[in-house]
Structure formats: structure tokens, C-alpha cells
Amino acid sequence: MDTGYMLVGILVMSAVTYLIRALPIALVRRRLQSRFLLSLLYYLPYGVLSAMIFPAVFTCTGNVLAAAIGTGTAILLSFFFPNLLLVAIVAVLAVLVAM
Image (tube, rainbow, N blue to C red; front, side, top):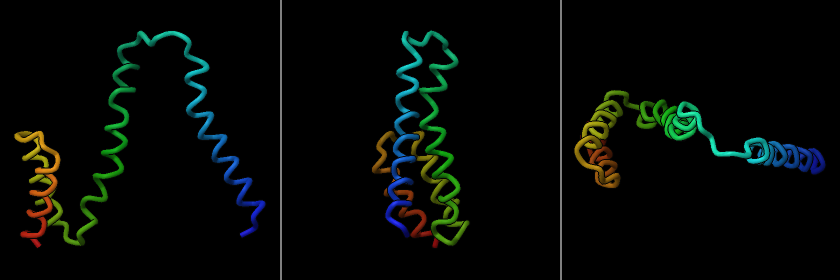
């Protein structure tokens, strides 16, 4: 790959990343009052993270049934125990037992 082509790509990506972060600060001068917009911005990271992780959960083991058992275990345990480490360890163990 040509070095100049790579540098142009890096510059374009850095400019786009900077604009995405700088434009909201430059355009919004006062505190947001819209409850809808505030709740959207609050829950957006959780929704994006879920959309990225959830499909990979069922393909990571190669066994859909074991993955479903692990996912069900994790969801069920997360309602009763807020400890993320405990939920993750028990879900992994459930997948190992199911395989």
C-alpha cells in the first residue's frame, strides 16, 4: 500500500472523528431541555453495545444451543445478582457444561 494513500486515509478518518465530537459542542450552546433527547442520549450507548454484542453471542461457541443456555443463564442471573463478574463466570460455566 502506498504511504501517501495511507496518510490521506488517516487524515480523513481523524477529521471525521474530530467533527463528530466537536460539532455538538460548537452547535449546542445551552443545556438540553428536551426529555426525549436527553433519554435518547442516555440510553444510546447501551443500545449500540447490545446491538454489537448480542448477535455474536450465538455464533461464538459454534453451538447455538449452548450459547442460548449461556445467554439465558446470564439474563436470569443478572436480574437477581448485580455482580457482573459473578454473572459472567456462571454464564461461561453454563456454556461449558452445555457443550
